Amino acid sequence: MAAVILIVLVVLNAWSFALFGIDKRRAREGGRRISERALIASGAVSGTVGAWAGVRVFRHKTRKPSFLARLALASAADAALVALLILAR
Image 1 (cartoon, rainbow, N blue to C red):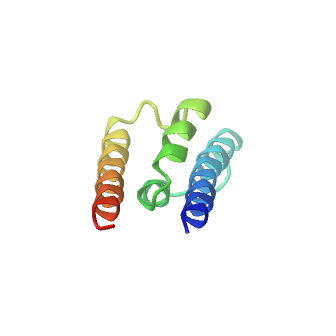
Image 2 (cartoon, rainbow, N blue to C red):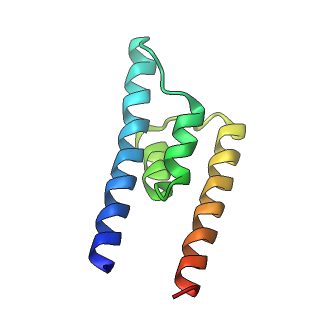
């Protein structure tokens, strides 16, 4: 069971990281962007590590304090959920 949870977390974080990279590329090329809501949501569903890695690696959304604050709140909510799941065992 732990292996399945680990695989799911890796996939969710990789997906979140990829979304930030795709959005950064689209921003540079003038293409259709991924909404901030979708980027935050990708982090909120246990993809926070991937989301923050995407912010850092792609230097994406670093000048938007409101976005970073919402991502931080999503990260805190995700951490609280994980803590609750661990304590419930």
